Image (cartoon, rainbow, N blue to C red):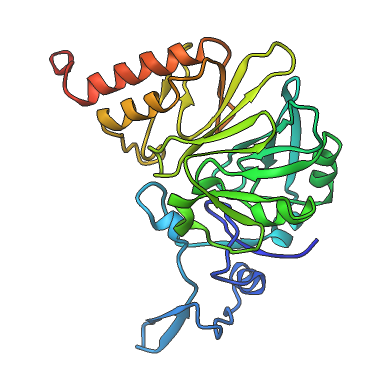
Length: 309
């Protein structure tokens, strides 16, 4: 399996640096930045010292560059560190994928098998690591015929996962295309809503990012409509509640108007279960939870309950 570079903080594959540069930086050697991607800063004696670039995704206010500074890694370095992708059944026809030890932001990704009886499933949100064992585990469950990330923080190694499954299309919301850090022929831009597989819909609802999307998949076991909510519509600790945020690590909220817009974008479907970006799940009453949570959120951020503070 080929080596590629990725941001160590968010886990997103990149063309900003090479795998060799990432390995040099990790080993403490002087990275070769003659490709022109790096900028120069001055060291103590005023000499220009080339610096590897900062990940744009992490530099954005929704994420963060670690206090120790930007770090890069590569697929081979992650493999040498003992990374592995575990695959577990979330419910019949739906599988969760998690990379351990924690890599990038630590997202939980999902493989939704095609409910219409076709071959291959939807890989929704993408692991920040890949190896032969992970590919074999996904292949044993039908493989991936389409790949979609809910938002840029979970692009992961999307082109590598695509290559592992006959260059499956990687659908990227056009409104978020500027955040793609590694380009490839498999990437297809989409607007509003697509059906990447028969019986599966991916809908842009915005909020966390302008192109933030949710997947809608019907369970073959009980015909319930299941939402893969990413960081856009997220189950929380309290049963029957979800939340909406511009930034989770930095606690930036959204406005009441935007939250109402997100809820309205899915009010035409009757969602039963919702799975979030970090393994959280809401097991019943999804649509009611979205409606009530959006109303509650909008009331609080608009000051309606300021007398309680």
